[in-house]
Amino acid sequence: MKFVDEATITVTAGKGGDGCHSFRREKRAPMGGPDGGNGGTGGSIYLIGREGLNTLADFRHARQFRAKLGDRGGGKGCTGRGGEDLFLAVPLGTRVIDAGTQELIGEVTHEGATLLVARGGRGGFGNEHFKSSVNRAPRRTTPGEAGEERELALELQVLADVGLLGLPNAGKSTFLRAVSDARPKVADYPFTTLHPHLGVVRVGESRSFVIADIPGLIEGASQGVGLGIQFLRHLKRTRLLLHLVDMAPFDPEQEPAKVIRAIEQELVGFDVRYPPEEGSISLAARERWLVLNKMDLLPEDERATQMQAVREALSWNGPIYTISAISGAGCAALTQDLMKRLEAMKTEIHESD
Image 1 (cartoon, rainbow, N blue to C red):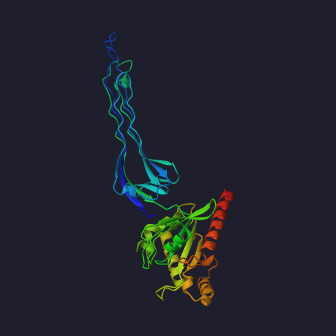
Image 2: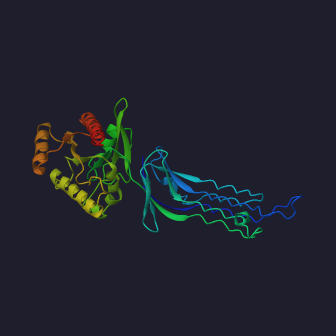
Image 3: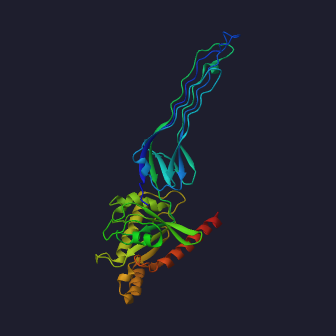
């Protein structure tokens, strides 16, 4: 799945209907009192969450959205019909920001959840509304109010359990293909992945989790270099990070321990530039597992030594796995352990509540 994760749209709610100027004119009441009804309320605009959507691509071409107008009030005290509300379907994880004020309007995180982004204008008053004991034949009416108009910045943040980290060509997309039905592009050159991809990993009946693959990070990503900063925010919603490392790089200077430290510094830099929200864990402090990939390219008698060298160079005490994403070796054991850990994390959250 490819993602268009930013879009700017303009929403205009419907104008309220005007109030009606009318007097009763019946055979037995030729000079009847006022009976002009109020105008109908203009239609509002809502965003509604849909699980089946994974991109904001629908908003690349259609960027102007208008709700229906409220109908004018009628005689005999009839209130005008309200304008029909407009519902715009968005993927789960969409954040909505007022482009003018930079105010966060809200987020859509659940199937069917709605978020009001532009309220319809109130209908105007008909002359019947102004009738009083001292003014029995008012001629006053009011027009309907204009609906709200806003320019909105939409941002899609991937909703995934596990996020993949690593330099370009570390094998993240190959790993995603090996463990899920996702089919991201794979090639033997850097920056093959230009958009985040999601994959559902199934490890048994009714047991599955979602992995997000983002474009490879390079030094300076947290400051906007390359594609990193644009997609690092997708990892903010993940519960666990898998850090893939190329154990057989073309460039001999890309020592595994060195590139791991470089990525760690980018996570710290991102947290400084974009502090975590209250109650959430920073990226640098989030649980992270090391996955040493392309081990099949090393001589068999050197693999254990190489893994131990990485562990010692980093003083690493966390989980560490060796795999070959292209052959699938070690991937099944890794996904089984991931599933168990995610289930344990879910239990821990429920117990703390």
